[in-house]
Image 1 (cartoon, rainbow, N blue to C red):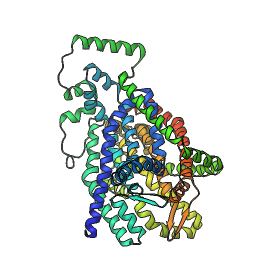
Image 2 (spheres, rainbow, N blue to C red; image 1 turned 135 degrees about the vertical axis):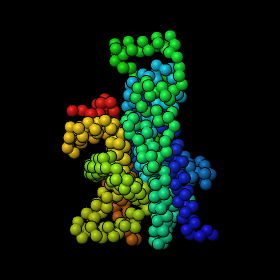
Image 3 (cartoon, one colour; image 1 turned 60 degrees about the horizontal axis):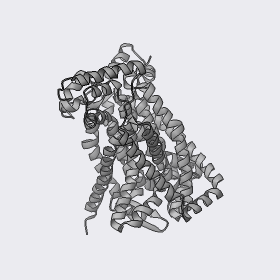
Length: 545
C-alpha cells in the first residue's frame, strides 16, 4: 500500500503525462491538417465546420461514441485508457488546430513567393516557413489547452453512464473518489498537489515557451529576456522573418538556375495579370484527405441514423422539441453573457501585459495557475458556501444561476485571454513606437493598433471561447449540494441529467440539436469572421488610420 502523498503525486504525474501526450499528438497532426485546410478550399470548408462543431459540443456527447468503440470492443484496461485519452484529446485539440490553420492562412504572400522562388520541397517549406509561423499561436493555445485539459480531467478520468462507472488512474479519479467518500481533507490535499504541479509546469515549461515563441513573430526586434531564454540557433531564429535576405540565412545557398528564373518571371507575370495566386495542395493529397473525411462522415452518419437507437433518438426529439429549443435558447443567452465578459477581460489584460513588463511577469503566473486548476475539482467544494452566500441577495434560484455563469466564465475566459495576449505581443515594435511618436491615447491605441493587430488571434480565441463555454455550463447546471442534486434550466444541465440516469436516447437527441445549431453558427459567423480577419487584418496591414 503506497503512502497517500506518494499515491497522490503519482496520480498527478499520470494525469499531466496524459494531457501532454494528447497535446503533443494534437500539435503534430495540426501542422499537416492546418496546411491542408489553408491551401485547399474543400478541405478548409470541412475542417472549419468539423472543428467548430466538435469544439462546441459538450464532452458528455462523446460518451455514447466512447461506449460503442472503446469500451465495447476492447479489453477493459486498454479500452478505459483509450477512452480517457480520447476524451482528453477532444478537450485540447480543436483550438490548437484552428490556431495553426489561422497562422498558416495569414502568412505573408511575400514569404510564400520567396519559398517558391528557391524551389523548396514540401518538407523544407514546413520546416522553414509553415511550422515556425505556427509557433506563437501554437504556444498560446498549448497554454489554454493545458488548462482546459485539466479542467475536463475529472469528467474524462471517471466515466459514469447510468449506474455503470469506468475510471483510469489519475488525479481526477482520486479527487472524485475522495469527494464521493466524504474525505474532504484528502480531496483538498490532492488539489494542493495538483496546484503545486501546475505552478512547476507554468514556471519551468509554459512561461519559457511563451518567451521562446516570440522569436517567431514578424517583428525582428522583439526578443525574449536573455536572462530567461538562451539564444536560439540562427537557423531557427530566421524562420519567420521577412524578405529574401533573412530567409537566405536559414536556407542553403542555391544558384538561381535558368529554370528557376523562368518560374520566377512566370510567377511575377501571372501575379501582375491576375493578382496573387493561392498556393494549392497537390491533387492527390486533396483527393486522399477528401476521401478519408467523407468516409468518416458517412460512417458516423450510418452509426447515428440506423438501428433502434436512431428510432429512439428521433422519437425523443419529436416528443420534446419545444422544451429542448427553450432550454437551448436559455443556454445561448448564457453563452453570450459569458463571451462578452471574457472578451472585455481579455482585451484589458492583454493590453496591460503587453505594455507593462512588470505586470506581465506577475499576471502570467497568476492567470496560468488559476486557469490550470480544474474547476471540476473545486466547484463541488465551493458550491455550497457560494450558493449560501449569494442566496442572501439573489435568492436560491439566482444563486444557482450565478454559480453556472461564474463556472462557465472560469472555464472559457482563458481561450480568448491567451490568444489575445499573443496577438498583442506579436504586433511589430515599429507600430508601437509610431503610436508613441503620435502620442496616441489608450483609446486610440486600442482602435488603431491593438484591436486590428490582434484581431485574427482574437477571432480564433472567440471561436474557442464560445465552444468551451458549454463545458462550464455542463459542469454547473447540474450539481450536487449535500445529498441533493439541483439543475439549472438549460440544455447542458438536461444532457448531464440524461447521462446520470442513463437516458442515451435523450442524450443523443439533445446532442443532435446542439450540433445542428453549432454547425449553423460555424458556417454563418465564424467562417465569415475568419475570412474577414485574413482579408482585412494581415500582419503587414494591421496598422490602419
